Length: 401
Image (cartoon, rainbow, N blue to C red; front, side, top):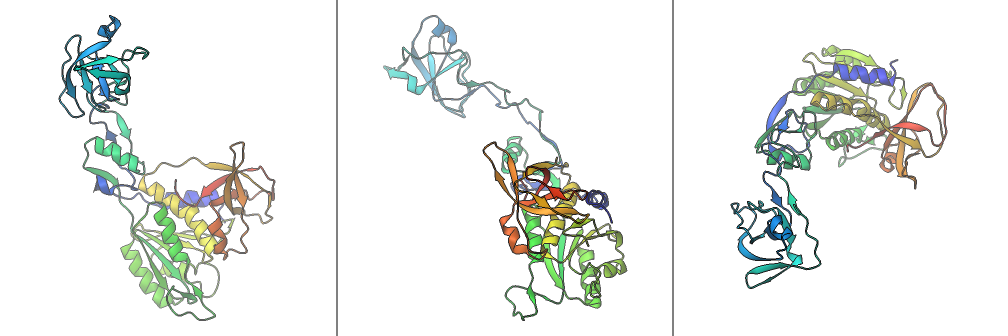
């Protein structure tokens, strides 16, 4: 069996890069950037006034002048005025600084009488105060965003400020999530005592969406070889990514690996040295589709989706690899099998500012209800049995961000 590290390496190597497309900027939030965004102009593009007040020349103030005749008013968006010697201009926040002015005093620190503004006696004036210099944020042509960035609302502001109406992003992959099993019954349908509600597929779709992948659809296939050939064949033609849940172990009704191979999907690996999720299967379709076959147990399916599917989609979209995140175990854990253990945890912090991972016990790998109280899972090394409280461990959060 592959180790978890070997399995992830194989998954990433087997996943082809997604294509690119141009989107309207307003529709690009959550997508992965595929171009460099360069500054259209200096920012700010002029010496920007930061307070409502008056603008005047520091040299006049330095020579003892405290009362200034008001020459005019200039608001944000007005053309730039030229200041006359010995005068001031009433100025508004966001306006361009008038020519010859190099000092702003806030409106709260002046008194206006007879069309003149007088500065309070106890107010300390500083040359250049409340002026945001041109280009002090960044210069024209500066690289503000680079490929691989998942676009946030803040990035939309940056892109729009650079005058872009469209932006090049990674294509959102067409994903099909397939639940298999005669025992599964969808919510809203009549259920028999010997059957169970279908939960893996909706949960996997939701997990994908939480990481930015919106074009996934769910289907259910019974444990019938002919039905699997027909429906899985159709999904292979329509999707670039196929995620199957169930039917991947060693039972007589676990048809998925054989059916996928019959459909021209080449196996990359089957089984990983981990718990939960040991039976996971990976293949490559005839048209370069990536095919994940996850175990049917809910905890196993969700862990494998987060551990292998999400990183593969991230890499294919062009996102850079994220550095590992660590937390300290809040309580001790013992795990005897010679397998990597993915232990669900709830995150807490202590007064020292340390991130702690509190182990949450799951009854079995089918106990998905316990996952609701967790923030992710930690990775416990396969060559160790006892993990005392305080042990630093790699943390994998369920959700992005």
